[in-house]
Image (cartoon, helix red, strand yellow):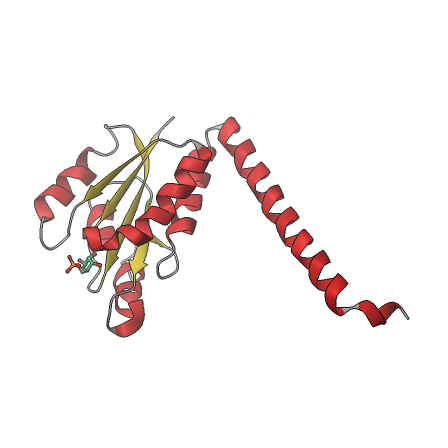
Length: 168
Ligand code: RP5
């Protein structure tokens, strides 16, 4: 199976990245995690992106905050699908990172998830790998079914609690 590459601009982004790691582990998808910064270690970020395809990656998740150029810088150097996670910092509530990540020029896309959306970044990477992996696609379908059942159980509990009089 292809690997998912996870890069983050700083180890301070790790709490968001851990949400992605947990999802990938739940699907048994292999991954690597690195700290590469578009600004502080641009050569390492570039080298990772340039060699990612030949190193067996099928998708890359890039998490960064503030002037978040990491996902775009990675996307500039690979044709693998790149998923950007804008991370919330102490100022501007993550809108700075959201706009820096999402507003890419035509031809160099970054699939941007919600601010701090680590879990969805991983789900999207699994969906990308599942296009050519039937077993993984079945795991995704099972996961969706389980998630639906959880919500239906919650609905049943809420209806039982609040709708007692509606059948009278
Ligand atoms: C970004 O700057 C990083 O992705 C991080 O979200 C933010 C702050 O980095 P640190 O100063 O905590 O290393 O490049």
